[in-house]
Image (cartoon, rainbow, N blue to C red; front, side, top):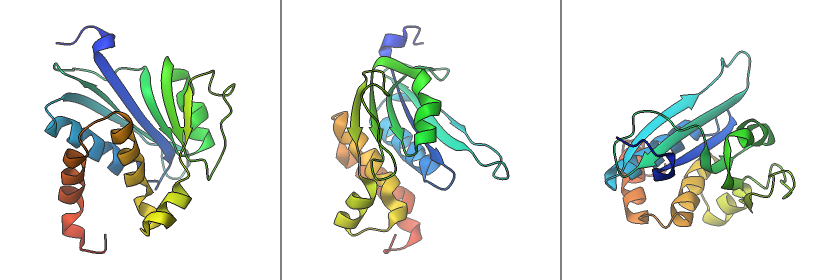
Length: 168
Protein backbone atom coordinates (compact mmCIF):
# COMPACT_ATOMS: atom_id res chain seq x y z
CA UNK A 1 0.00 0.00 0.00
CA UNK A 2 1.26 3.47 -0.88
CA UNK A 3 1.37 5.73 2.16
CA UNK A 4 3.82 8.32 0.87
CA UNK A 5 2.31 10.87 -1.53
CA UNK A 6 5.77 11.43 -3.05
CA UNK A 7 5.44 7.95 -4.59
CA UNK A 8 2.20 8.87 -6.35
CA UNK A 9 1.73 10.98 -9.47
CA UNK A 10 -1.65 12.62 -10.02
CA UNK A 11 -2.93 13.84 -13.39
CA UNK A 12 -6.10 15.84 -13.96
CA UNK A 13 -8.00 17.13 -16.98
CA UNK A 14 -10.82 19.66 -16.79
CA UNK A 15 -13.15 21.51 -19.14
CA UNK A 16 -16.77 21.95 -20.11
CA UNK A 17 -19.11 19.01 -20.62
CA UNK A 18 -18.64 17.38 -24.00
CA UNK A 19 -14.93 18.22 -24.17
CA UNK A 20 -13.84 14.60 -24.00
CA UNK A 21 -12.32 14.68 -20.52
CA UNK A 22 -13.99 11.41 -19.49
CA UNK A 23 -12.68 9.50 -22.51
CA UNK A 24 -9.23 11.08 -22.22
CA UNK A 25 -9.04 10.14 -18.55
CA UNK A 26 -10.18 6.60 -19.19
CA UNK A 27 -7.62 6.11 -21.97
CA UNK A 28 -4.82 7.64 -19.89
CA UNK A 29 -5.75 5.39 -16.95
CA UNK A 30 -5.90 2.26 -19.12
CA UNK A 31 -2.50 3.06 -20.67
CA UNK A 32 -0.99 3.35 -17.18
CA UNK A 33 -2.52 0.04 -16.11
CA UNK A 34 -1.29 -1.72 -19.26
CA UNK A 35 2.17 -0.37 -18.50
CA UNK A 36 2.11 -2.19 -15.16
CA UNK A 37 1.22 0.76 -12.95
CA UNK A 38 -1.49 0.98 -10.30
CA UNK A 39 -4.18 3.61 -10.57
CA UNK A 40 -7.11 5.09 -8.73
CA UNK A 41 -9.32 7.45 -10.73
CA UNK A 42 -12.30 9.67 -10.15
CA UNK A 43 -14.52 11.96 -12.13
CA UNK A 44 -16.46 15.10 -11.27
CA UNK A 45 -19.37 16.18 -13.39
CA UNK A 46 -22.24 18.53 -12.59
CA UNK A 47 -25.83 18.26 -13.62
CA UNK A 48 -26.03 19.18 -17.30
CA UNK A 49 -28.97 21.43 -16.46
CA UNK A 50 -26.72 23.60 -14.30
CA UNK A 51 -23.66 23.50 -16.56
CA UNK A 52 -20.20 23.60 -15.09
CA UNK A 53 -16.84 21.91 -15.19
CA UNK A 54 -16.20 18.23 -15.86
CA UNK A 55 -12.93 16.79 -14.53
CA UNK A 56 -11.19 13.45 -14.51
CA UNK A 57 -8.32 12.73 -12.13
CA UNK A 58 -6.09 9.69 -11.82
CA UNK A 59 -3.46 8.94 -9.19
CA UNK A 60 -0.72 6.60 -10.43
CA UNK A 61 1.96 4.61 -8.62
CA UNK A 62 4.15 1.54 -8.74
CA UNK A 63 2.37 0.06 -5.70
CA UNK A 64 -1.38 -0.37 -5.06
CA UNK A 65 -3.27 2.88 -4.51
CA UNK A 66 -6.51 2.89 -2.54
CA UNK A 67 -7.67 6.48 -2.92
CA UNK A 68 -7.32 9.53 -5.11
CA UNK A 69 -4.57 11.94 -4.12
CA UNK A 70 -5.75 15.55 -4.00
CA UNK A 71 -2.58 17.31 -5.15
CA UNK A 72 -2.05 17.21 -8.93
CA UNK A 73 1.37 17.25 -10.55
CA UNK A 74 0.01 17.61 -14.10
CA UNK A 75 -3.13 19.50 -15.12
CA UNK A 76 -4.71 19.78 -18.55
CA UNK A 77 -7.01 22.82 -18.49
CA UNK A 78 -9.32 23.03 -21.49
CA UNK A 79 -11.07 26.19 -20.28
CA UNK A 80 -10.23 29.17 -18.08
CA UNK A 81 -12.94 28.07 -15.65
CA UNK A 82 -11.34 24.63 -15.33
CA UNK A 83 -7.94 26.24 -14.77
CA UNK A 84 -9.32 28.47 -12.00
CA UNK A 85 -11.16 25.53 -10.41
CA UNK A 86 -8.22 23.10 -10.51
CA UNK A 87 -5.32 25.45 -9.67
CA UNK A 88 -5.73 25.25 -5.86
CA UNK A 89 -5.10 21.48 -6.02
CA UNK A 90 -1.80 21.79 -7.91
CA UNK A 91 1.54 20.98 -6.32
CA UNK A 92 3.95 23.91 -6.15
CA UNK A 93 6.15 22.29 -8.80
CA UNK A 94 3.21 21.20 -10.96
CA UNK A 95 2.92 21.49 -14.73
CA UNK A 96 -0.08 22.93 -16.55
CA UNK A 97 -1.01 22.34 -20.18
CA UNK A 98 -3.79 24.60 -21.41
CA UNK A 99 -5.81 25.15 -24.57
CA UNK A 100 -4.18 28.37 -25.74
CA UNK A 101 -6.72 28.74 -28.55
CA UNK A 102 -9.39 29.37 -25.90
CA UNK A 103 -7.58 31.38 -23.21
CA UNK A 104 -4.18 32.53 -21.99
CA UNK A 105 -2.36 31.88 -18.73
CA UNK A 106 0.35 34.21 -17.49
CA UNK A 107 3.10 32.88 -15.20
CA UNK A 108 1.75 35.00 -12.34
CA UNK A 109 -1.72 33.45 -12.84
CA UNK A 110 -0.20 29.97 -12.53
CA UNK A 111 1.65 31.03 -9.38
CA UNK A 112 4.99 30.33 -11.09
CA UNK A 113 4.19 26.73 -12.03
CA UNK A 114 5.40 25.54 -15.41
CA UNK A 115 2.83 26.30 -18.08
CA UNK A 116 2.71 25.06 -21.66
CA UNK A 117 0.27 26.38 -24.25
CA UNK A 118 -1.42 23.69 -26.30
CA UNK A 119 -3.13 25.28 -29.36
CA UNK A 120 -5.64 22.48 -29.85
CA UNK A 121 -7.58 24.02 -32.74
CA UNK A 122 -4.34 24.54 -34.66
CA UNK A 123 -3.04 21.05 -33.84
CA UNK A 124 -6.34 19.45 -34.91
CA UNK A 125 -6.13 21.30 -38.24
CA UNK A 126 -2.50 20.27 -38.77
CA UNK A 127 -3.30 16.63 -38.01
CA UNK A 128 -6.38 16.76 -40.28
CA UNK A 129 -8.56 15.10 -37.65
CA UNK A 130 -12.02 15.80 -36.31
CA UNK A 131 -12.13 18.53 -33.61
CA UNK A 132 -13.70 16.03 -31.19
CA UNK A 133 -10.32 14.22 -31.20
CA UNK A 134 -8.51 17.10 -29.51
CA UNK A 135 -8.73 15.14 -26.25
CA UNK A 136 -6.49 12.50 -27.84
CA UNK A 137 -3.94 15.22 -28.63
CA UNK A 138 -3.94 16.20 -24.94
CA UNK A 139 -3.23 12.69 -23.67
CA UNK A 140 -0.62 12.16 -26.38
CA UNK A 141 1.07 15.36 -25.25
CA UNK A 142 0.95 14.27 -21.60
CA UNK A 143 2.32 10.84 -22.50
CA UNK A 144 5.22 12.39 -24.41
CA UNK A 145 5.88 14.96 -21.67
CA UNK A 146 6.05 12.15 -19.10
CA UNK A 147 8.28 10.08 -21.40
CA UNK A 148 5.79 7.23 -21.17
CA UNK A 149 5.41 4.51 -23.80
CA UNK A 150 3.47 5.93 -26.76
CA UNK A 151 2.98 2.44 -28.18
CA UNK A 152 0.98 1.46 -25.10
CA UNK A 153 -1.13 4.60 -25.46
CA UNK A 154 -1.69 3.96 -29.18
CA UNK A 155 -2.84 0.41 -28.48
CA UNK A 156 -5.35 1.58 -25.86
CA UNK A 157 -6.68 4.25 -28.24
CA UNK A 158 -7.06 1.61 -30.96
CA UNK A 159 -8.88 -0.73 -28.57
CA UNK A 160 -11.23 1.98 -27.32
CA UNK A 161 -12.18 3.32 -30.76
CA UNK A 162 -11.86 0.28 -33.05
CA UNK A 163 -15.59 -0.51 -32.96
CA UNK A 164 -16.49 3.05 -34.00
CA UNK A 165 -15.30 2.60 -37.57
CA UNK A 166 -12.35 3.70 -39.68
CA UNK A 167 -13.33 7.39 -39.81
CA UNK A 168 -13.13 7.72 -36.01
